[in-house]
Length: 192
Image (cartoon, rainbow, N blue to C red; front, side, top):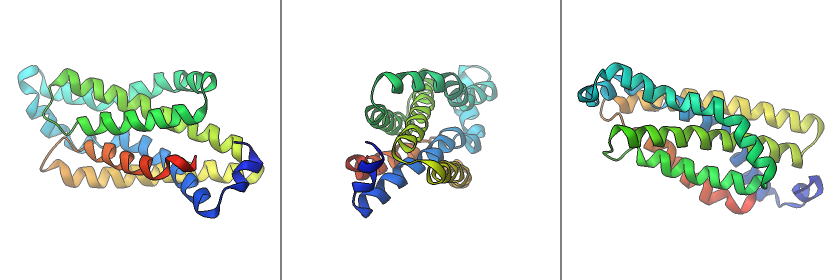
């Protein structure tokens, strides 16, 4: 979609598109932050696997590592395929992998879901910036990318607060990120 096509969208579709694109920063922050408040509960649950504290730290940092390593990979994949396909594939994987964490799963499956959440979150972030770059120019594009960073910071704060509230009852609060992504994705798919 080129600059003129973005301008041709109706106002409501343009708003939906912007919300979807700007919220990817919040989803990336949620991928990192949702597990932190529940590390104590996670350590207790996986204590029979060995050092529960170390396992909780590994599970928590898995998404960070995947995001760091996966960002260039997802950029390369997005350059080979179209951004929209990578965006929606990443949103689907994020929603499914984030939701699976709410189930009573064993440690290896939890680690795989955290890897998938990290990789799909950078897929969302990378393609959203590319879509903004392709559809807007100049100062407006710069402002939108800056707003995406602001949404990311705010989303990280909100996800940390919500995850902290849920950590007392269940450590598997990462499902919130998956369910929220699924809702967002189904409402905005036709807008991008």
